Length: 253
Image (cartoon, rainbow, N blue to C red):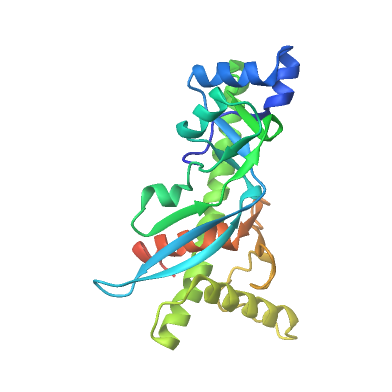
């Protein structure tokens, strides 16, 4: 999706039932009002990363993305199908991930397309603006945002330390899977070591668990001791674009 949506996702069929109307009527009225529609897909997409080897050559890396891991915004060409045709609809395009829209020269996205019906569609209901809750919500948001930024910055440093270590040892930039493997091996070694040594890359030990790179949809769980903030970082969905950004703006490690 192009931007983080402001509001709450609700199933089209559930929303229609609450309104006492049919899903098609609600959907088409929403499209006429130029509101976004989102779809839950079940297949896989392909993210192509084009790394510059030299001035004239690019090296392509292909990654499979599980489409079911998020809701996908539908572009206008697909909304037109929903307005005109009866379900099931065959969807052939979605709004691509942010990284593709921001840098199409280095990132491309495709998926095969699949058939959907009204049960797979979601609408975005705007958040209610209640004045009595606004100040408290803003205060909580700032606290969460500050802790989240600290966690994000520290995770960036973990990945960048591994990236730099690989590059210095092999005289070549590592692929994203190499970086993940280095962090995984380092985590496993220090978890099993009888000595109280800090990991080489996760020096502040925020990683709680990490999957090996060869399992389906590998991820790691992290936790910041101060504030108790925790979260999950996905290898395929997140690390390639993160490393691309870090190469352009390396953190201090």
